[in-house]
Every structure is written in C-alpha cells, then in structure tokens.
Image 1 (spheres, rainbow, N blue to C red):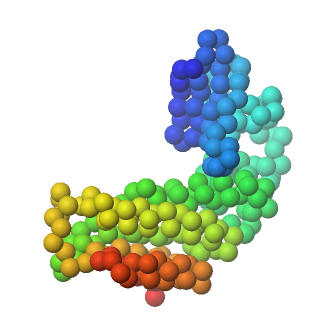
Image 2 (tube, helix red, strand yellow; image 1 turned 180 degrees about the vertical axis):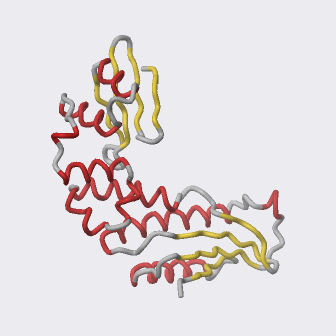
Length: 219
C-alpha cells in the first residue's frame, strides 16, 4: 500500500493499493490507535481537490455518503468546527463537552492539549548561576472537564525533561559541572489542587537527586 497524500492539518493519509484507495487517520485511542477504511477514488479526488474537508472525508468513509453543510444542525456544525480546530475546545470545555461522546471528548482534548504543551519537545534550556535550567511553559487552563488529560500530558512532558537530564543529553553543549539541574515550570493559570498535589509528588521524587522543580505561578 503506497501513500499518495498526507495532510498534517487534517491528520489523515490517503493510500493506494492497486486500484483501491484507503483513508488512514489516528484515533488517540490506545486500544485502536488508527482507522483504515477503503474509499472510492472519487471521494479521495474530491478531498484532494479541496471540495470537501478532512472531517467530511472521514464521515464519508464511515457512512458512505457526503453530507452538505446545509444538512448540518448547529451542534453538528459546532462539533465539526472544533474537530477541525481542536484548540478551541480549551476555551470553553464545559459548553463543548455536550457535543461529543466521552471518548470523542477525551480524544479531542488530548489532541488540543498536546498541541499546546508539545510533550515531546524541550521549550528552552540555559544556565543560571551555575545551574542548568530547563524551562517548561504551561499555558493551559485547569478546567475540571480537562484536568485529568492536562495532568497526563504535563506528566509526560516532565518525564521527558527528567529523561533528558538523566541521559545527560545536554553535556555536549553545556558540559556537566552544575550545582544542580532545575526544571522551571511557568504556569499561565494557577494549578488546581490536584495539579499542585501532583507537582509536590514530583518534587518529592526528585529530592534525593540533583534535580528539582521551580514553579512560577501567576500573581
């Protein structure tokens, strides 16, 4: 099966196997991380020409027909908009939650927060007063509806920072003669009680090491 079209924006891929065409896209579900569905060549061409959106193509692959914009209810239109622009769900998750199933909501929130926090990336690194300092910026609000996913992704990012330090990936550029190594987390929004408890637990784990957390909270 050969990949013939990839869209980073819509997070989908169109593949060809002989005269058959297939749509592939992630689900952010551990038990079923990817969907692969056969689609007609005409549907693939219609999407690639810009006639239909990625979400419309996914709906077509699932139901077998196109749905025109005039046929969408307001809730359906709102849902499609958020699916095309996941970060909007973070602005008012309480109101948006009713548009999705529990699994869909978790998937879209995971996608949105991952896009904001970028858990596999290092935000910044430098030296301060003979300390090695890694900067982590958390700009996501601590709404109750998204708190659990927020914590999971923040934990993933902190774990990646700790791994970066433990594996000494900084040595080639900065050397290794530091009094201590600091993970400096700047929060745009004050963490919830659960968030603070999690950070306290991380700090406790780091106590026997030369690593520590430094938290910067909004005033």
